[in-house]
Length: 69
Image (cartoon, rainbow, N blue to C red; front, top):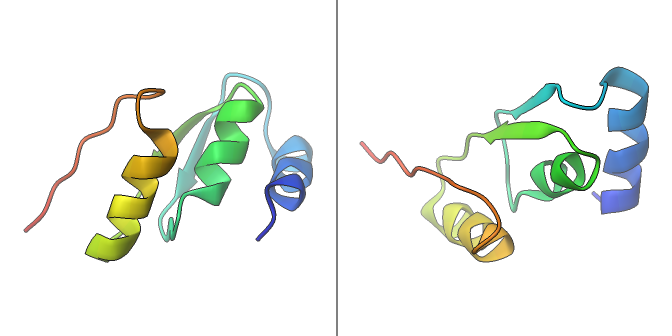
């Protein structure tokens, strides 16, 4: 999904400062859009490959914790 589309959706359904939950984060596009729009985000992803993509996307910009079972 393009970041611009995520921004439009988040603009309709959230306010600045709210928390966006993406329980199927994929590569983290929704989280990226949330941060660009001054929202906090919680991303959940189970595929290791996607977790690595998310880490690369947000490297040095946010705090994140990886929990693997």
